Every structure is written in structure tokens, then in C-alpha cells.
Length: 173
Image (spheres, rainbow, N blue to C red):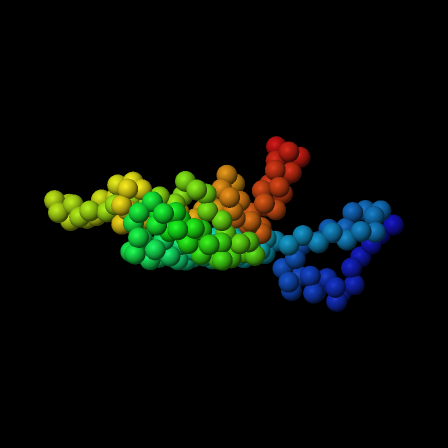
């Protein structure tokens, strides 16, 4: 059985720079995009995942800043142990109000550190010392990783390409 493409289909595939193959005795048409098209699709997918990472970084920074501001606002009025407890509650509540990719953010208790800052005049910078005794500062870290309360950032295409590459190397490698 001999198969041929119509002149119009052949011209259309050639115009799109697509390569095609017809197996003898088979009625299937297999079209494979050239490397430039596959590369462009991979680049577009990578761009989307990088955009997700930048969005996540911005959302996490906004949540950390808001949590630190909420905690220091409470500390400005009351630096006692009960004030520290209220400052911790305020920071956690504000952070929980922030959303990243549809997930309400959470904070690990170890990522909210109270302390004191003092100016180091020799180095012209502030030094932070962790303490809950009369704190005047707070360090807030909001994370997205597989071991954090928020879980890892869900990338859209990175997992797909990793699985495809794994299958390719498993099959051909």
C-alpha cells in the first residue's frame, strides 16, 4: 500500500517547516516539529515557570514585610512578654491573610524571631541579636519549600519536562 500526501497538505507542512514521515504499509501520519519549534515551546514554558517564581517571591516578601510591620507596631507599645505574645499573634494573623497561588500563607514558628538591633558604628550597620527580653525588632521569613508549612512552589512545566526527559533517557539512555 503506497501512501502519498496531497500536494496541498505537503505544501502546508513544508511552509510550516514541519517534518513528516509515512511508514510503508501504515496509514498513520506522524508529524514532528523541528528543533526550533520544540525549543521555542520549551522557552515559553520556562518563561511561565520563571514568572511563577517571581510572583511567589514578591508575594512572600509582601507577607513577611506585613508580618514584621504588624509585630513591630505591637512592640512599639508593649515590649513585655505579653506584648511579644500579642506581636507574634499579630504577625501570624497578617501573614495568614496573604495568598500565593491560591494558598493562604503560613509561617513556621522558627521563622518569626524577636530580638534587639543596635547600631555597630565601626561597620556602620545594624546588628541583630535574638532575644525575647525587651525586643525592639523582629525577623520574619515566609518560605515556600517542600519542608515548609506552605509547601513547595508548584511549577507548571518543570515537572512535565523532567518526566519527559526521564522517560527519554530511560528509553534511549
